[in-house]
Image 1: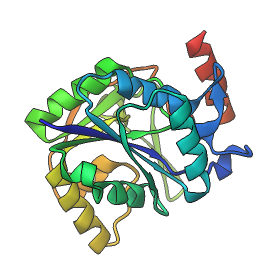
Image 2: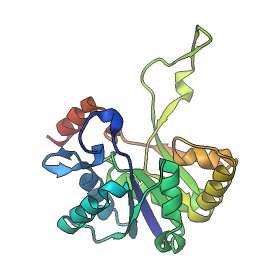
Image 3: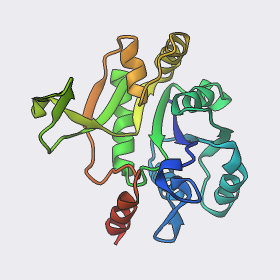
Image 4: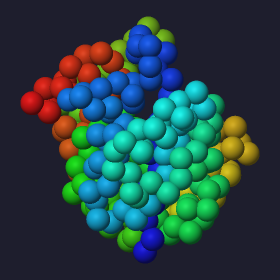
Length: 224
């Protein structure tokens, strides 16, 4: 089956407090986006890669793709206002149209291993929608109306990317979500919205999402 990865790199990092988006900050003398791209370059199941970026960073990204190995990158596109818009734009490309399976990944998750990427791709062939998850270690509290309720930790997991989908299912879910003005925080939520059953697999502890300066420090430690 033809498999394409969409790397969502359209954020501008306003909350991070940096002069550039997180995905372009460097760890181990290399932009985070490139660390992420390298993992998909190394994953044998991935045939093509689409990268969605903010219009202000399009040329910068294009320069990076020239500098580093980007043989699998078939399209560099301008992302939308939200992550969901960016994925929807990527789905309208010729590359996506010719793919049977789509994996969607956060540009700021630079440590997803090629093994995890391949596993998500393989499992998606059978299940149609696959999400890597890890167990939550802390006790989780729900705070509502001034009260606190302890939730059952054994049933709560943190979702990671890449998330894999049959292309046709993701396209259908996106259309329905847009029509209903439903905005999801991850792509699996869009499939859940239309009642599609999601298969979870075990994620990786090191597959962190870099969202704060502390995460950036942790990322440097991982690479040591």
